[in-house]
Structure formats: C-alpha cells, structure tokens
Image (tube, rainbow, N blue to C red; front, side):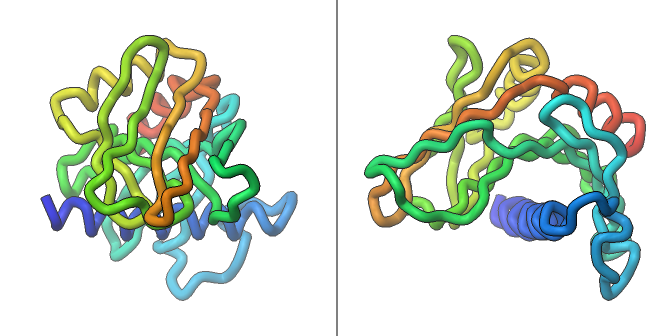
Length: 188
C-alpha cells in the first residue's frame, strides 16, 4: 500500500506541476509549454471535455493517462486561508495494472489520521489521506465512484488540514465520461 501511495503521490505531483505550468502559459499546448529534461516526461493534452481534460505522459518511460479537473468552487473554514491549487485525478497506469484510480490533491498537508470524504449525489466515499493527497479508502468502491462520477453533476471533496482548516472543494463532473473514454482509448 505504501508503494502505491508513494507512486500515486509522485505521479499526482508530476501531473499537477505539468498542468500548473501549462496554465501559466496561455494559448500554448502542453507539449510546447516548456522544454522538459526529457520529452517523454511531459504531459500532453489529449482533449478537453467540459470541465475535464484527458492527458498522457511517460514519466520514467512508463505510460500513464489521466483525466484531471480543478474545482469549480473552493471554500475554507475559516474563510480566506491560503493553500496551493487542488485537483481531482482519475489515473490509469498500464505498467502497474492500475485502471481508473481516483485521487485528489487538496493543496495543503492534511491532518494525520483524518480521512477525507468524496460525495457524489447521495453516495459518500471515504478517502484516506497522506500529505496533500487523498485516495479511495475501500478499493472495492473505486469502480462505483467512477460510475457515480460518470452519471453525477458534481463531486464534493471535504478535508481538513494539519492546522485544522476545513475545506470543501466542488468539482463539476461535466465531461468526465468523455475524458475517461479518451484515457481508456489511449492507455490500453
């Protein structure tokens, strides 16, 4: 489990930094955003579908594909607390036989031992946390969560920072199904 967390965290940091870099350079495709140390390590936008993008990358020569979105609203309690950007990912890593792994980066170190929650419609999924990442705690529920995301309107992620700040991030699910279909076609 620790290996999965470390790899997922490393991948999420890689993907978030690639997305952040592209967002900072308007009107330039991912592949042209900055000259990376290795072109194989650069995330490439496969398509934008509503509020979700489909991407591929090859960190360390291993192909990964992922759907990614930023929250449409982000609320902190107390209000006005600063934090890094947050993202929701659904990742596929064929070399590791991982398909549709749901994770989020919440933008701050989370309270140790405190689970986050992801809610879609009336269904709530417990997510274990490590540093600034969160993953579905019960792997058997991951497929259910992805199906709920395909059918739902939004996903609400609630978490708490190591300093006690509570956050509620709402992600639009518009386009997630098409982004996942593109990811599946690219990473077989």
